[in-house]
Image 1: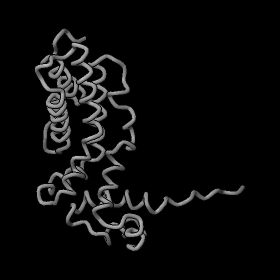
Image 2: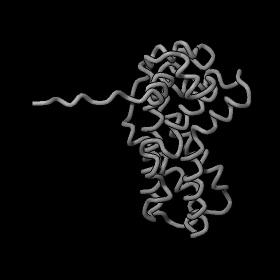
Image 3: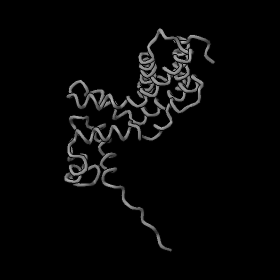
Length: 204
């Protein structure tokens, strides 16, 4: 019986995966193209041929993990049914999973973002932009429908909500923090605070 040998992962994908690991491990400044190429088991010339510079490689890593084509990104709050509580709960769970999956890389970027030029800051903002835009659009639709009050900006509300989720994920990621409640209870409370705090009418 003939055994089919699986084709090797293309160099570009290996470089993206390796770069995410090296950036998370060594930081944005500490990561070198040589270390990334070595991690990906390709030569450095291949890295430069594929991406040109370390900065462009970082940009590609962020798009791969957090951009419109990232896994799970197609199921965002804009495409969900009309129940606002269910929409926000689905968004919260997806956002929390995205953060948990990429937490080492996010921590590396947060730790160094104030020491880098505009390019790195733009890349950092791009981490949160796709889901944030979808959430703002959903909240704007709720305001237009009369479900949420117009007195609170949907943009501010979206950032408050995202901040609660982000804080919850960070606190639970520490091995030294005692977990006093389940993660789902925390997310449900965050949704409830947003809905009750900004509700114009009773929200089911």
